[in-house]
Image (cartoon, rainbow, N blue to C red; front, side):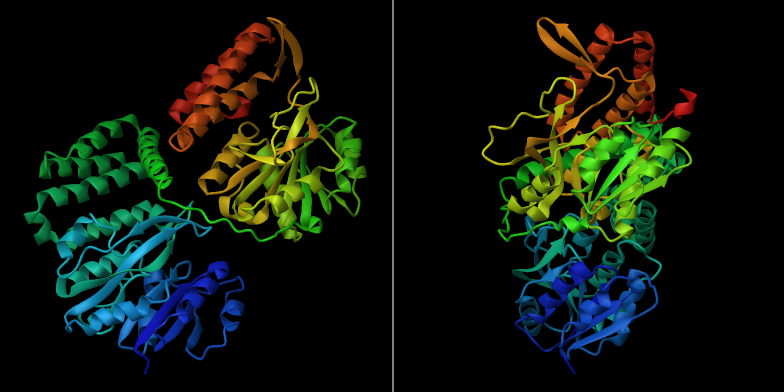
Length: 616
């Protein structure tokens, strides 16, 4: 019988699972069995597992279970004295098992858990944070106060299997924090120790996480308050903190009255809990106001953390050669009443990609007839029965490209005229880039149809590309793998600010936005007019009034989401938008109506509302 049972629970993470398995098989300590519990994955998980020819591996594919149920199944199948869990996206360092088992050998049977130090890494393997262990022996009080990250992940500890006979298995009613709840029960009855070595890489993902299940997290805190009632009665400060956290979560969920009851109880329990007073006051601002203040707070913490990480994180860039197969590139063009020259523009892109997907947002009958005439083996036309907006149509086209087996999409506006070497140039940038795995999007520099000026003048750069914070949608080459991770374009934005929000979201996910230094297309935006202002040529967009409503409404929402992460960009963009307002006042028609729509957009953004376009 092996000394240790290693249990990996997995679901649809084949791309990470292979590394996790290798990290176990590469352990310096070899007396273990490896149980891989597949929660009915639909990707190539089984194929990845069976690619390893190692008799220590047992693969079990089971019906869908919660994480607690899956771990309990692993405990039932385990045959060893010690248990170690490994999340499918984490990795053990080679000496993990050896170092932790050495600690067990020097301790008595009352030591139920041994853990080690860990390093957090992002999706690209960049080191974000190191943590050295501190808590040992009787850690119950310290663990309950949550002042120390402790293990960081369920992938860290090695446990004696015998402790489960005393404390029970994972609580299957707990849907978030099931490991923390188990460790509390363990710490009540057993001692804990650690090895000072770094034994684990914990992968931190951006975007939705288990911890985003706010209601389930609040339920866990309520359960802990109930289970350890006697302890909390003796520690009013800690009880107040738990009550305050629960109240905050209910407020974020929109249950303001219930949230305030918990916050008031927190203040009554410990009157010096200043955060509780602050939460109570801002809860009267309404649900959206509370959520935005919370987002600002989280953003501020993230900003500070990112700033400090500049002094500690070293990024190792791969220098492997990579390329994009043009046969895997499709162009997606959204149309709404394009002009007759559209037929010529589509010919310019048709031979540069494998397929062109046109998504039409219910153009006029004659225009739809023209588009149908363009259909061929290389051009597909998807006809919507209403104007769904630019973002929704882009998502349609991207998902259709994915269904057809393409790996990259080039998004284009209907009035963009591409150069003959656009796609070839974008592919070349990808191949040249030493950090190609970090590329979120490659944008095309453009020349104005009206003035000939470049979108960004960087032709003096020694490289063919530069890093930017945002790029326009038209002429952008996007990986479908990146799209799948970052999510779709914001359909509620309809047409304005879609590219800004998406680029900033990609940056939040750790990706870089690149832009070609040389212009690769001629781009038109709005009904541009030239005006002379103090000897300078000024371009005025002349958008319809409703577009100015959307522009300011969406822009302010972007500011609220990304201010703490991109403060300089927000300030610069605010200044540029003020120039747009001045242009409206000086040069555009229907000034008062457009200013009225701008004010309405600002007011709706501050209230967290969105007026339907038909009601404007």
